[in-house]
Image (cartoon, rainbow, N blue to C red; front, top):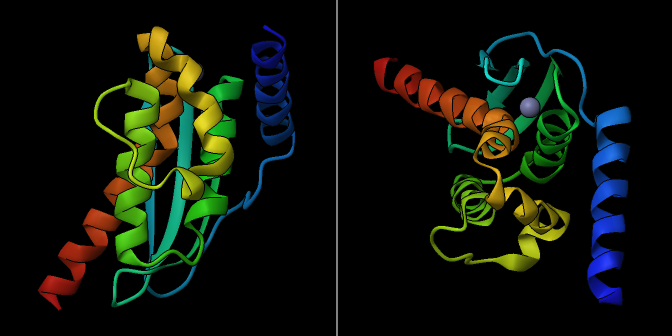
Length: 154
Ligand code: ZN
């Protein structure tokens, strides 16, 4: 019992910390930067994500701005910390693993890499919250897709 209380406290601390002072907050401009907007109308969350993807699929830099509930903003902030500098393989693993954590579907491959993000598994019970938690992640996925299409066209 004590452990689960501790975990709940930790979860609240982490979410509050990231939603109050989001990491990698702001915009990115310049060559190769992709801008994606995502929203979650049921909750009123919005995310603008700027991503610079290298030719090898590495996330060289990313920043975001947004508004909405604490979970949507904290999840996006935590994601940027993990994704900055991640190579293509790591990005895909993180995306898959995080989806598994918040939906409860599938298995997590690399729990260590997720770190504090594993705390968000509590949203499994609330389908609306899953959308909040995934908002920033879906935006990044979209940006990476777009960068792949760009590379193919070039
Ligand atoms: Zn929300």
